Length: 84
Figure 1 (cartoon, rainbow, N blue to C red):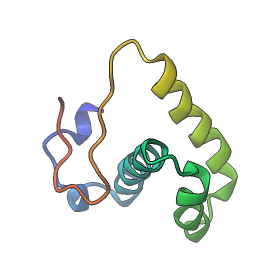
Figure 2: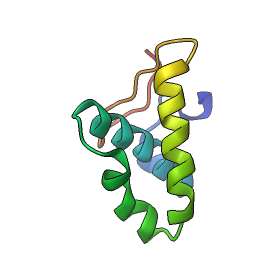
Figure 3: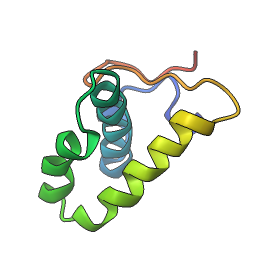
């Protein structure tokens, strides 16, 4: 994740920009009690990577429940990627 720190998401490679946005969107949806899959489906579908959505959501759920350290993700649209 260090390659993302202190960078503006639009300055990241398009794929990394999508990844950081998807992580933020998953977190926001899960914390709001909404289905992360439903929140992420339009973006994954538009990019033609819908097949990766189940694996991505499982990975995020595992990180959420079993990470060795507390992970914090910015809100969707946050200007910077930072370490907290």
